[in-house]
Amino acid sequence: MAASPPAVVWQKPLKGLSALALTAEGDLLFVGSDAKIHRTTSAGEERWTYALGDIGRGQPVVAPGGQIYVVSYDDYVYALTPDGKLEWRYKLDGDIFATPALRTDGSLIVASTAGRVVALSSQGQVLWTFQAGAGIFSSPAVSLDGTIYFGAQDSTLTALSPDGQVKWKFSAGSFVFSSPALDAQGNIYFGSSDRHVYSVDPAGQLRWKVQTRLFVNASPIITQQGLVVVGSFDGTLYALQQGGTEAWTYRAGAPIAAPAAQLSNGDLVVGDAQGTLHAVSETGRPLWQLPTSARIDVSAAISDSGMLYSVSNDGRLLAMAVGQGPASGPWSQWRSVPAGWGRTLTPSEITARAEQVANTPRVSVAASAPETQAAQTEAAPPVQGTQTAAPRPPLVPFVLDARGLMTSAGSVYVPLRALVNALGGQVLLPGKTEVTVRVGAQSLSLPAAVRGNTAYVQVGALRSLPALRVQWQAAKREVRVITPDRVIVIPVEAQAVSRM
Image (cartoon, rainbow, N blue to C red; front, side, top):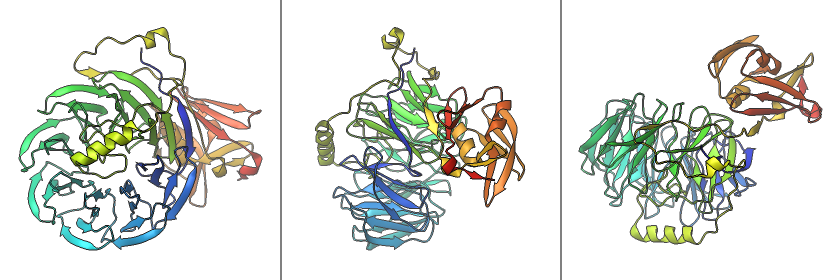
């Protein structure tokens, strides 16, 4: 029997959109759906925000001195002080989706969806520029010798010298959204929309490629055991040996676009498109699952103190006490370190990181529910090959923001997108008076109303789905929507609800 997941310490609707970066003090940095960069404490309490010109998906980058770099769809890269003051900004020629890479000299490598790659000094001065043959969504990675690698929409992986000259280009069979990961020998690993995982050596020669059943937009990691771990839209997490042979696979049951992250004890955590966090041992054995509020397409972040943070697509952040820091592999999490540098560490940096992790006190761990005797007993060694998902743990309630609610003739209406995301479903057919949604394997038409530019749906109509229960709890002034894998709590406070 699989264990229960660690306790959820907190979960809050913080408008998170990008992957999280972690500071040396344990604070969280992320870009929100409100087009601001947020800095919060480890408890999710806001320290400050800074308004950008647009939203962004790139992970913030924290330099060793505390300077913060962040990119946005407004074409700018921003440099901020640790307390959120603008130092400088630089405009590229297109949206910036990819996370910048921070080089050892403090300079940045930034790439845009227009295909421009720019090297900027820590003071914002242009060092050189390069024009790729197509847009770049793949976050650049920098090797120990300074070589810069990135994928592009012309189906290539490009290697640039430290001064921006082309060293080589490798052609995959389709787009390369995936960001490269680098092992200790300098080999490069990435996925492609052509349904393959690739390994290329530092000279640009193919080492191997492994086929999956659907495209691989997720970015690989390299575990501390040397495995290449990456998810595919076929719903499988693949663990590959350095030579390209399969070590094991794990079926998540939903598409995987997020990179995995490894804990110091070897366990791996990855989110899927249905909003479930999966924990798997270093040998592929299922450990636990935790349903969250919406799709997960960014990597979990692991702090040195043993906190795990996850961002769902509805902006909600979740914190769990896992009691393990990040693994010390060559690229055992997306962007190589919690601060998001995106490069291979030097030997002195590896030593400094190890000392920092060792000197950071660990949080205590509590399971989300008492484990049975069977769960406490060590499981039998897994057989090689595909592992199946673990049984679902006890459900964790997720609370929708009541400020968007409306009522009409005694019925509660909520914003369509918020409800469907919370249920892990999708909108099949929108409309002004009726919408069709899919929840799990079932489809349903719901009464709808449009106010301004927002579509609302009637919560009570969900009762017609046999797999769902809708409960009104008068004492708590809340509606609960209960599915087989999650509980959605909708507070209905009179002062917070508008009437249609």
